[in-house]
Length: 285
Length: 339
Image (cartoon, rainbow over the protein chains, first blue to last red):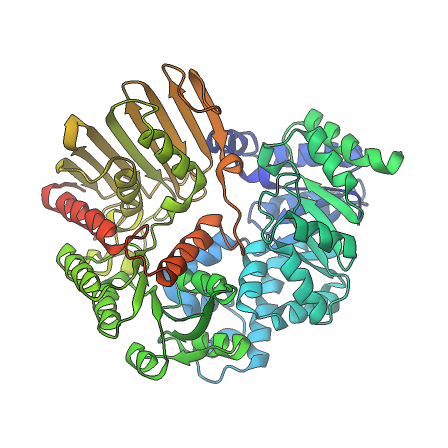
């Protein structure tokens, strides 16, 4: 994986510290062209991986890069699924079975949902149908790693339903020739469970920052997990949602031994450039 | 270990499942829901016992406590059934549809000395906790006004009938969004002595309100206002904020950010005269296992610790949630309706 990975929160008006800034960003990135303009500059600056939620807004962005494939041939997309709000809302409205029926509509599996005949194979099949639906907009683009969002990873982890991680990994390998990635707020526990389930060196993306923000299990357990080198780490929330300056934040990351990549997002080109330069400093040294 | 069963496996039931199953002090034994595919799936992958009937689960399992995340219309009956079996009860918000039921179950739990809790998770968010501390320490002086607001995109177009459009099933934005805000306002300044006026406005829903505007009076000549609209799609998800005016300062707080304005310096090294801005990152407490927000794990820790310590005076006990239900019922009594 590349050392620097660009994220997408800013494009959806997400700001973890300020609602006002979030609204300002959603105004700024109302048009798809405002998003692709930033992405094109990011690409020209040398960042070739874009990690993005399977939000419906991404459909137009994907269309753009399919149409301009010759110009941006090195661009890699890391889809992160699912966009959880739509599932959560549907589950509250129609119950879990109702929501699953809705999202598998048109597929043969939909008819079986709610019946008592469901078997383990069916449960895995449902997962595969949902993954395929989320992957559809990315058809024809380069997607070498496919991620599970933290809300799903951590829910399954909490439940102890580790078999799903194995099934997910197999499915994305077989169908998309992609590696599975897992976003988590509980990295030490997740890595332990994935290793135990036979997934060697899983790709995990997790909050890693100097102040221990959203590092459940404690910062020491994180540092130990990173040292043990039993996973490939993408560090996110390295700025702790803005509580740290880029310089102190990145210097902490660069002190850690095995962090393969750093994920960050920003809405202004100068900030993106500054953060990228800080992250790459270690490699150049 | 505390033996726990979950009743109702919608969004909140599943969310509690993830946290409880990973909790070191909890033995999650059983789940109960009429959707057999869901309970079967959970049982198959996680080893808990599955039931479709609450009575059967309670009879077969040796439980200490239950988590009720059933549709609101069932809360009163399910709570009473659990209390009669001497089980500690955590129930999702809103508490009960009828404040008479809320009072009855509160009294029953008190009589039996059982630990109770309602899922008003805002009381476990770092920024709101720090705001409460600033108020209690008198940093903004005597409070004279509080304004609670919540906006979000639940109902943004006319839609087919569902439980959300039926007041008798807990639909409408008073039970849903507003209960959170009223409860949070009570956390800061106590229960309103009177709902002075209220307007319930239909925007898209046929049977229930999509927005509520209400004015409150409090002890000590404090005034309050509630502004809630769940049909505002400019918000990605529910956003709750509270502004508290005092004669020595002002607080504006939401789940991410805390702004404190002080007329004078106070005895607190992190605050000074003028504006003081801090963030969740400054106030959030780490949790053992994270799912969707620190507050969801923290509220479960609080419930578990209350059971262990035999403490019935815990955060969000039925007694405090009863106040919210009484205010809600007063809003319905005085409200003018606008279609």
